[in-house]
Length: 465
Image (cartoon, rainbow, N blue to C red; front, side, top):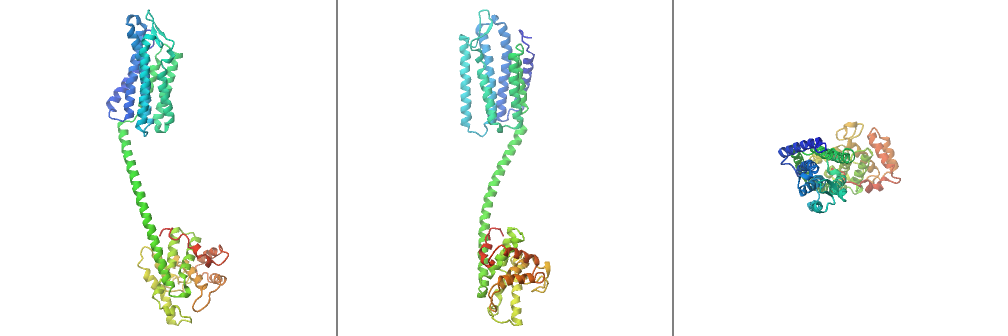
């Protein structure tokens, strides 16, 4: 007991804060701004507790000391309380306002320091006016008319820190939020208990010391700070690499689009050359490509596969470039030799496109689009699924367009007749799966599908070869 006060909590508080201050000074001296603010807060807290014990001792024996000394010690104690509050506020600000403009934080610090300075002036003036507290001639400590305001500035700083933490809570990690919340709880509970329940026990000192201990468990250790610095550097490097990748990807996308446009233009020009061999079949390659694309979409193939099938259909007859034009355009029946020469266009086309290693589908379709599902086609007598998948698609598209186009030796057949032929030869000449897919495609158009070539060809060049 000290002059009627139980000081055991204050002694324990001094021990707690002093140990924390020693640990921080020895182990955390080179850490970040947040921990330095915490160190300043500990120094102020230790000073406040010490002043509290001194004022308790001097107030009870004020007659033995000079009047001005008692006044100054009490003023210093109240000022130290405000100093503890403002330094805790600055600790909270150092976390909450990370990333904000330094000028804003500077203005906030200056504004609060100004308030603290004005409070110090009122404490000095109190030495002559006694409006906060005073000592009578007998040396008895008494409250002045404005005593309730003596802790107003301290509470103002605490409330200000509460508001900042509440507004900027996302800037705190979970440990900091829990520690700060417990700090507020210990501060207010101990303050109210001393004020209304245990007036002879210095619980408010213990409340701030306990709060300081709770904050200690949330601060960043030197190793943690190094780890976070490394992670931040890695994140910055990652962000830089992502930007570089995005830029390079954008460049590659542009190059790819240019390449695809050039490919489409080149293959379209080649298709025009092929079709020019026979004016009766002008546009045949483009129609076969469009029908093939539609069948592929009905089969649920990917956009890339659909696009490749379209291009393969576009140049499926490339071998005709090597066939005598007189044979291709002959109006009458072909001789066995001439028919053999016509048949050679498929193997010739495969040989021409064999060099395009990146897209083997071109060679497969050019070579095998005249194979039959029953194995009686040419040039390799392949049957069933031994015939390349895409070639089976183009076979149906090629045959339908051939039947519905004028030829040098006959007029075009109607769509109905051509469809009947496809159905009749399912499983012999044609893969049934491809015929069914093509029939489903035709059903989508009430008129002739030949009127929808442009519509069927839409999106070419966007699937990505």
